[in-house]
Image (cartoon, rainbow, N blue to C red; front, side, top):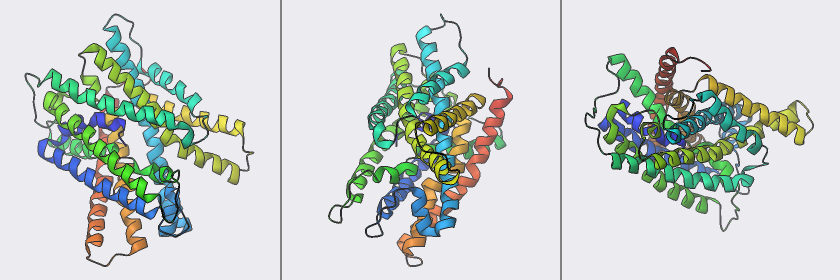
Length: 399
């Protein structure tokens, strides 16, 4: 759950301000915990059947064809989007690690090369067969995300409030403030993005009628969300308190001292996004290989896996090198893809399957989530796209 999106939360706060920023963080935490609970509950709602994939749940709710068309494109955009953002994150953190350690004494190396170095690891790791085979990588990633989140807010406390700290909104013009607000909503949405692989994870837990998988899964979700709160809120609030509207779109890029600690934190980010990249890439590999084997009649085996997965990693690397804008990408993908699958698609499925009584608490709660989620999906990509356009004006491609 704790993704690299946590590092952009102080930046999101600088576009939202204190009041709206805290409100958006809390509301997002509550809504996404509620929709996760719905997905855990729906995993085994048909006796003797388990919905191990998001699209299987969609097909049960909306019908075989419509369910696929509603869920699969959304899931693909999320998973590919995360992989692109993680390529940028990995490359930028490697570059920051290099720059901090060198302290101006080394030759400057382009960000492009650091993204390529980061991608080289995935050409190897992507050949691992399935989600269970990367549990060790996943554990390392979880430990790293907790560690660098703690370093991010701990180092901010240590540095203290900047002398001329400014808590006015980052933008000075009215359009800038409005679009910045939209983009920040997407950045927060991106941080709460564990829903797309939750059913796949629950599918790995044994289940019997006496001991259904939803019980241990829900315990895991609750623990995860307590940890999420302990990571997200301190990073967002203390990072913004220390730097105000001068904070970078990645808090660890803003911090420079103590050198050894910031270098370590950036290396932790690299290790974390190596694991997270694979977790989001595995369902994509599964989809690609299923289509190639079943529809296009390719023979399954090592050759197919080698070519398909290598091409996918190369594609995400190429897009990341072309558009290495962390904040803009988070805002765009966070709203465009994460809002539906995380904020309101589970609610629509719940209404379609369980049909709660009109104006009951369940009906009302789901509709509130749907309305907020749809607003998020429409508004935040506009802010994110504007940020990418502004960044690309001053950026030399492949530099």
